[in-house]
Image 1 (cartoon, rainbow, N blue to C red):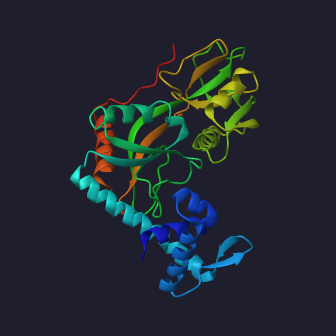
Image 2 (spheres, one colour):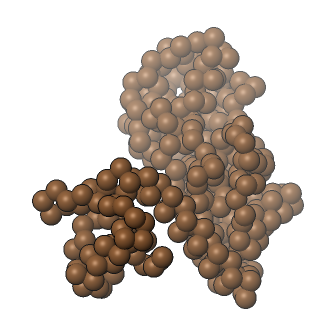
Image 3 (cartoon, rainbow, N blue to C red):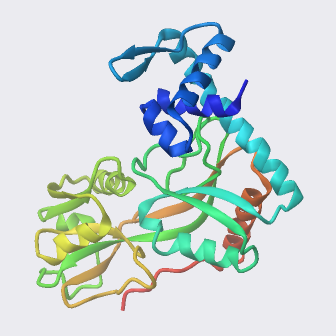
Length: 307
């Protein structure tokens, strides 16, 4: 089968019009249509049904579509494998990461890696749902950096570092002069959290459960900068990773204070995940080993202590 026709089939099946495919591929619209017609002949069934100017999948097309994506991924992996065998220090590594790691850990790992392998490129993907692994059985992602320890067949999770969880307070909070508190001491304060798909929200729930308390969730933020802004405006308190922005997190500022949490489980473990059932191409294997070696040597960034 013509692999170009398969790629065009996948694009139309995913919602693109024939006109849009022709424009993207810089081909004529009749040429794209004829290629799809030939594909239907080869498959032996109608793959699309027309509704006005739009094409939708027939039952046969839907069944075919479930396998075409996997076949094209395997084909692309094969082409990339050949290219990387010729030059293993090139290629592209796909890395998914938890958003709170994207401003300090991810740059450190990629920057140090590219000092040695400058021609390797990265496909970086910030996770929207942090409670679902990005290296599952049907994923094309090579590696994942997160605090999610998944017990899933084929998925290996290797711990890299422990990061404290701290309490974030507005500047005029009654505990702003303290250095260390337990979360039960702020049980009556309004809390600001991240959305339910966030692992930091799950961490707050665990901390409260272990302390035997329930807290009022006053506001839900989409990201850590927004959460910090809400706290700085005096709208509540929050838990936050000890290090989350570029460079070193400031222990205090004119608008917020960070306090150590004395609770024994006030930390998160950052790890690296990969799928043992998916063969990693040489560039991805080089980066995986770089991350593990850097962690073993104690060269990963460390949180700044509370002053």
